[in-house]
Image (cartoon, rainbow, N blue to C red; front, side, top):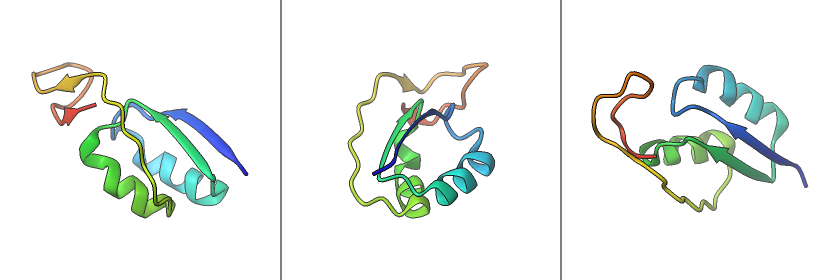
Length: 72
């Protein structure tokens, strides 16, 4: 079983991370800095069925580093 752990910085790098995840086919995927609103897209893209989400921030105010997209 393959485990991949990666900080994806919200949705900034989907164009780079999705091809990598598709090619590597992890059995377990641990991601940091993920927006809750992107979970379904990540699950569909990777083919992984189960998901546990532990939010540590709620990005709802203007931020120079991240879009205001909710729980993160």
